[in-house]
Length: 274
Ligand code: MG
Image 1: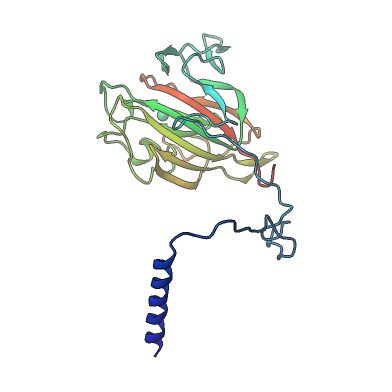
Image 2: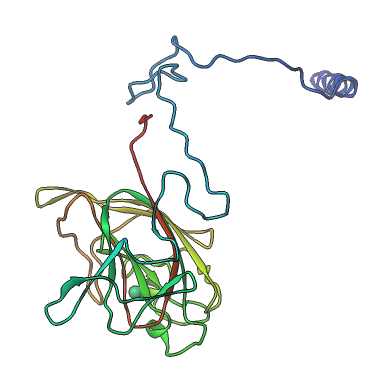
């Protein structure tokens, strides 16, 4: 009996859809509610009419371009938003990395570069290319790194058919977590990292919340809000040392000629900020 009723309903549904396939026009819906329950742990009701609407951000007209609220750190023209250390006194200098044809390239013995502006929680888009000519092995193939807050390295490496330790390949949280997959393009091809980063929090000298990173490599997920266990280390277990709430973003000079272009960040703000 039940089956018959169901099939009757199905038939009537078919008949109805055959008669009119166009949704009705002019339907209205409330723009919010004042009589719904409060969401546990929040100050707002479900569908609260008073809850601030998120501000409008205009996405870039071209893919991976900076949206309207991004801070563009390198647009292919100059490294004026960046600094470096150099010389015998290790003084602060303008970066000596080469800028050419819309990209910035590591220069032998020119040091890391880091941003003048400081950042904590952020979304970062960055594009990089390992040298087209393969030279060396393992960690000497197109090694650089995105140093979040100057301390937490997301590895940049030519990991296309390049055997090396898992937690040191492209997209690794270096020395801590290998990427979930190897999404590398061929050497010389441009690659993207899109990173959502939650900065660690310190109370005086004490860590109260570790950092977390979500990372896409060429659009493929490598880490899903993965906990960072400390400052980057080579052959040692990473640990945290306290630092400010915001620190410069740095790019590592590992003495291989890695290129960068189209670098932008967005400061991440809490919910309910109109
Ligand atoms: Mg590196």
